[in-house]
Amino acid sequence: MQDILFMRRALELAALGRGTASPNPLVGCVIVHRGRIIGEGWHQKYGGPHAEVNAVAGVADKSLLPESTAYVTLEPCSHFGKTPPCADLLIAHQFRRVVVCNIDSNPLVGGKGVEKLKAAGIEVETGLLEEEGKVLNRRFFTTIEKNRPYVILKWAQTADGFIAREDFSSRWISNAEARRLVHRWRAEEDAVLVGTGTALCDNPRLNVRDWTGNDPVRIVIDRFLRLPAGLHLFDQTQTTLCYNLLQEEAREYVQFIRLENPAEFLPDLLADLHWRKIGSVIVEGGTAVLQAFIDGGLWDEARVFRSPVTFGRGIAAPRLKDAGPAGKHEIGDNLLWMYHRA
Image (tube, rainbow, N blue to C red; front, side, top):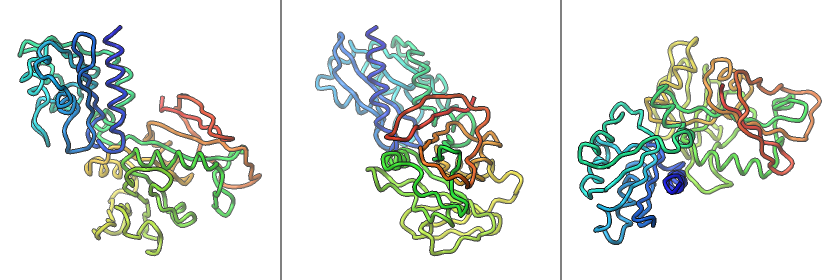
């Protein structure tokens, strides 16, 4: 029972790295000596110290470590990346025991960290709260196992099933509280994507305004380069990737990326994002783009706001398929329905 309590605390700590640790996984570490937490840490920023390093640094009396247990949400790394191997750190401090939530599916690690710890005489247990760990790091595991970013679909629809009016305008279907939540989501993910129609009709900024956090990379699909240069997307305030079929050009903050196969446009786009180490993307519209991701089976999670507003006529909302319900939440007078791809 104590093991579960301490691992759950490690998972809570790991979640604090959302929005800053990517493309690395979310990792938390709790160090316990005789039932008492003596050190905590999480991976706070990509390129910075890992969770184990921060946790060990927080221990005031390092002489207690050989009698301590480290609870780590992901297998300690055994390879040199931007930082030294965390398995070596735990071995150097002669930890008595290490409890691991998830084995790393990265082929650079893939059990090697656990093997290294065991070879040094450390007692290792794995798989504690494994499913909770997989949910927490679903973005990381998707990038490793599917070679593409984790894809979140997001839209707001009226009570009568429309995503926009007939003139394609959509303001405001969702309420202020829901829109603030969307800004929080943007701060937690690597990128946000829209299609040509949404870029033209809404002229979105796709940044973080109603929350504190980093702006995501902006992605726009503009197959035939119809979008005017004066849109907010091209205002040079944050990184923007424009995927198209005609032009390859890199500017200071805007990059035009030409994809060669129209029939594989979305898979090739996701493959390119994976190559750029973008681990997650929110697709915010419009209907045609959202439906293309749905029909191609290129999504992992959907977040749909349902508003009491009615339009009577308009642009129909996307139709999910192969979807399993993952929860429902009241956001003021809106209902947020969550789905995962079955």
